[in-house]
Image (cartoon, rainbow, N blue to C red):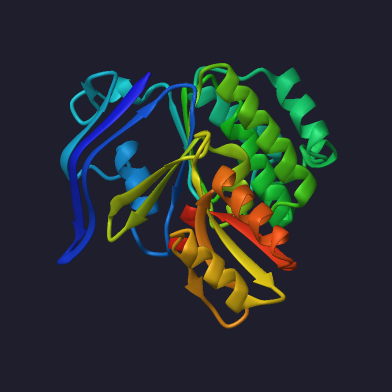
Length: 287
């Protein structure tokens, strides 16, 4: 399955929200959609799923324009951060209802997932008695109970405990192995780093940067604190390596291989590393 976005433009009144030229997504990969608040991530997800349709441009799935043929969205599932359940009904009712919209649900599997997520004992209680975390677990459980080939998650782990986050991460990675396509937004860099194959950084309604987290020689941002900044900076200048001097740290943008070379050379010159912080480049862009 393939999703292609071409010349996608959308505005709220006079405020331009999306202006995306060309972007493509492939099955069997997890994509991280990241950016600062208000850059258009949620609006982009809504355009991908026809929640909003008054945009210009084309969103196509396997070559089919989703505006012209709604059936193209039959294998697409989405969970938005503000998704609501039927709170005056039980958790089980919600599982059956939303599963029914998709043509049915495997209740035995749903209950197994509920047991693993530690909400099985509450599944026959009304959702309005659930805590925030329980509510979020139920929403995500429902989202993975259908056979969607494309899954879109907007801040899926907000409000979840660490154990449940790890459970869902493992499940999403298994879905990727099955050939599913997953798009996920999150402000937590660890979520993106542990799940995603590619990261798209959105600025001003467009994807300005793309990072392949599986690339062997991808660039990282290193912040290093050493016992002698002047000595390290002289060494870097001699080797033609760009750096940024900060109050406490020296900031470097290097591949892992190149960093190891710099580290070994510095240690050989009796430079002691007091702190080393490494981040993917996309993190530096969304701070």
